[in-house]
Length: 431
Ligand SMILES: *Cc1c(COP(=O)(O)O)cnc(C)c1O
Image 1 (cartoon, rainbow, N blue to C red):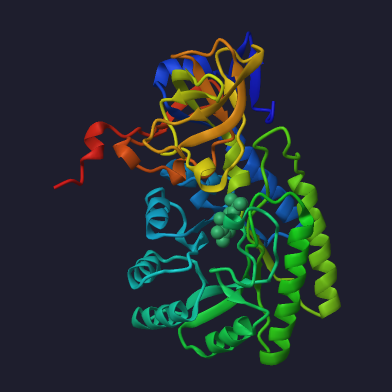
Image 2: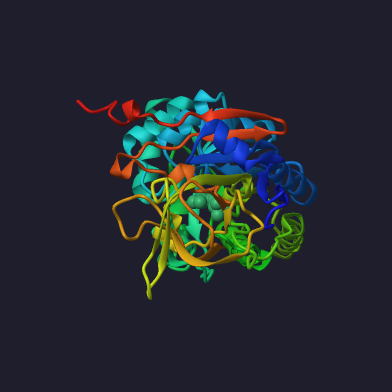
């Protein structure tokens, strides 16, 4: 199996030590199932490796857009993680969970005045500032509120990570941040240093997602450190923080490699250390922002088959009771997933089909061209694996479909982390 929290016992898929048949019976379908010990272990891996190789001051931030609900913030905070948010909604959720606001960094490439004021009023630790208008607005509102606001600048190191275009964010022409290459990053740095209510603490980059090699992080570290050295030379300002972003890959299918996060971090840390010596810089406090690699393999989604449609001479469809409203990732990015017939997990898979959702949309595909057992029929249980990241957080109410509950497993225990929406919830804001 693609993760060690998955097992097949007596032809049944087990997740987090629990029978998917029993979970589906207890909670109904469709349902997100998440495994708390897996989330915790994924956090610990980052916390341990970063302290060990980057030093005690280094900080892993959970990129909470990957999976945001109150309980998630409590779990990651108790493991020593800070958090990134990209909206007031995420910030509000973290605050409601009691998350220490000082340990939050507010991202987003388009924060409006409300966002900035709300975040300052919450006492947010840091803004990742994306553009000049925003810098001026933060300076203005921080002044009004009588504080000096910590910020880091998001800059684009100009790296093409060769991943899917929509998750490729570090190129010069990206919508995010200030390019180094054009001089924009240097220019805005000088401006920030002259503003009275801004405390520039460092620089940030995030070059892509679903990356498997430390070489990408080494390359961005190199460009960022050279930039930091140039800034020091031109302005005398030496950045205290270098945030290298998130992006470590996870296994969606057997074809994805297994990644050794600890060893990757070790390699990046060794490089940062030697490069800082070469450039005569004090090593900045290093931040990383893992999202996917904290939660993806901690989640699966369970569905029941609604119908099996064989279009003679063309193709076969297996339709389920969920779809792009709970997992839009194939529709958005053509993302790959592993699909298992959870109640006949060892049966021979000899039936080629597309696994499709219930929405009125031909693009509502969870995964095309898969193989399922030939006996697959209405009522059978389907598990889509590795759905812990960017599934619940990307869910929509398209077709007025209620959002699924998130059930958390913790050894022999299980609990509702997020209630499923009811039909009443669907109309709650309708006047
Ligand atoms: C999305 C995002 C991340 C997390 O990326 P993953 O691929 O989920 O690890 C980190 N930092 C920033 C700025 C992001 O936008």
